[in-house]
Image 1 (tube, helix red, strand yellow):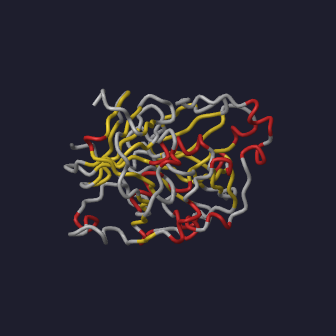
Image 2: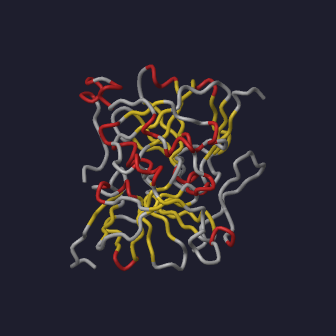
Image 3: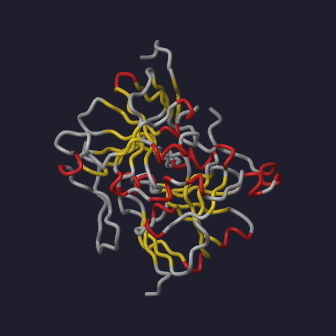
Length: 151
Length: 165
């Protein structure tokens, strides 16, 4: 695996856990199911499936929680970032798109778990909004020292 | 129990909390730090005065994502549960992720921020192909699994399920 060139890399917020993806993910999805909502503490999980052979943890290892008999969720024990979802016995790793260093490279093409979707999550563009600077002011960004992994 | 009483916690149930004061406005934050923290395209947060908040089970793990404060999560299952500032007036408030409330239906954002890093495909969600869970999976996985997550209500004597690979 080490001699392959990653197509994409990613990791958790603190940088203790890093991973590499060697192929284009197939059929990325948004899952609104109640289990993904609880795991993410948000309205849905946005993830991209990759064959385990085309994926590698390159730094550190995640901690795993079994949310059901069909779901193992990998997260960073140091900072909590949710990194991946796996079904035990399956040769697929579903990585969280937001933890890619460049998440704009992967776009979901389907939504599942619609039975528990929250209406507002599909209509975000109707909400009034601001940038961080508009909301908090330039001093906020000037004074903030980010400890987030710079990768 | 007043109408301001709400409960919540992490997915595994090791962390549980209750709130007894009205919540501040619920907001969505798209900033890159919130994205990385929750592993999603945005975080949903609200806050309330500490006087109306307590952990009823467990204590969160914490990581300082910046000089401003700490991201709070469950050390057993990773769920991002809250945030606290480390100095200033804001230390009087407890921030909580919207999705960690048992009644997530009642936590509706009214404003969004961090638009500089908003994920490009979010506005396409209304038109993206939709399926109920498992509709595309033979044998419908959702009907054959055993759910280990904490129920969306208080449960006496709940013990998080340990990992069994």
